[in-house]
Image (cartoon, rainbow, N blue to C red; front, side, top):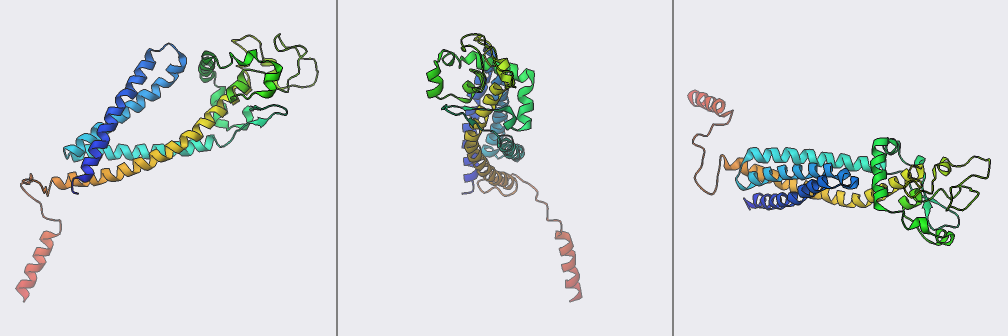
Amino acid sequence: MYRFSNTVIGFLNLFTLLASIPIIGAGLWMARSSTKCANFLQTPLLVIGFIVLVISLAGFIGACFHVACALWIYLVVMLILIAALIGLTMFGFGVTSKGGGVEVLGRVYKEYHLEDYSPWLRERIKNPTYWNTIRSCILGSKICSNVINWTPLDYMQRDMSPIQSGCCKPPTACTYSNNMEDQPTTTTMEEQDPDCYRWNNAPNLLCYECDSCKAGFLEDIRRNWHKLSVLTVVLLVLLIGIYTIGCCAFRNARRAETDYPYGENRITKVRPRWDYYWWRWLHDRRERLY
């Protein structure tokens, strides 16, 4: 049992060390890709891959070769990683707690409004730099290629994803004088949703600049984050377990420097405890008195 924790940490870090190689490879492959969607994800993949590689290498060396310094670095980085993951999870739940779709009378799909989401997400999505990249991704995915050919009956009977609902059509409440196949013109003087005026029938325009499109994208992120949160909690529990085993391996590595049970002791001089000389002096004084 003495080396059990070191063996477990060694195997776990060997596995994660090998797993980091395809992660880094995927990031490098995306760097060569010509699509903006792939480039949008390359930096997080490369960062995660290199962090996992460095942590795993330090943990593997420290556990298998009883290098206390490497294990100390491994535990410190693991503690920072656990704290960062807890903070990221809490932050993610905070910014994605708001949102959700609104039922549309006589329709299967829902519609989404930008003001229903957290202020932090709204500010980020309104940034032209971020939105231009996201818009290019949505346009490149051709998610609206089927929706623009729907008949009025399809709009009443078929469901849509949040992005399709926000980006591929104008808001249902909009009033136009002609069919959606032509450039829409309003026939009423009453105030309409600003997205009604941003809609354009051109396949490369549609409602990609509408607030409803941005809201649909945020709803998609919100749903994906709630699915990912289950994996995040499991990962946190796993990391805390690995960290606990790593503490045992670190203690074994430190013990190997002073009391190695499987071989000759590598320490030639053992220093007494700090109070040894004081107790020895007190004992000698008592011997002299009695």
